[in-house]
Structures are given as C-alpha cells and as structure tokens.
Image 1 (cartoon, one colour):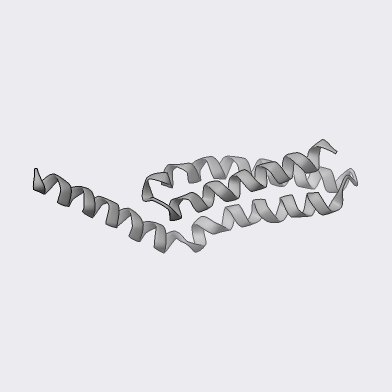
Image 2 (cartoon, helix red, strand yellow):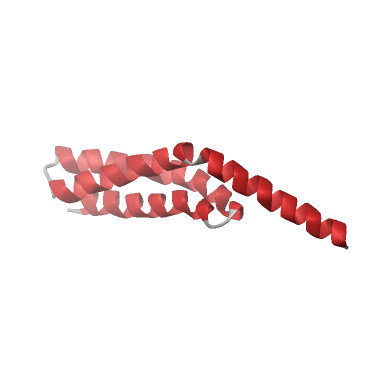
Length: 97
C-alpha cells in the first residue's frame, strides 16, 4: 500500500508547488522541484497500479502528478506577467531611493 500513498503524497506536494507562483513570482523557483517530484509520483502510481494496490488512490495520485506537470505550462503567461510586475515594482522601489 506504500506505492499509492507515495504517489498521492508526491502528487499533492507537486500540485501545491506548481500553484504557488500564483501567489508571488518569487515562488517560480519551486516549479523546478515540481519537475522532480511529479515524475517520481507518476512512477509510484504506475507501480501501484501494476501491483493492484488501492487503485483509487493510485489513479488520484497519477492525475495529480500529471496535473502538476501541466499547470506551469497552462499558466506560464500569468507567471511571466507576475514576474514582470515584480521586477517593475522592484525597479520603481529602487528609483525612489
């Protein structure tokens, strides 16, 4: 039963890490960790399905991991806008000094 739990846990963590840049552009570096965790979660999910462990948790873990890999690509325009706004705010702040 460990493989399906590992897949779900890694899927939840990877999904959270892929959504954090919505809060601030400074979290963009966390998406690189996402690209390490999500494939490991996919592998764990596939192993759990092959071993016929809890199929519901395995499929949920797989879906979360695939979603975590897709989210940065789907929201890349927003991430870039947010990063540009953060840099613009920083430059404005530096001009005031």
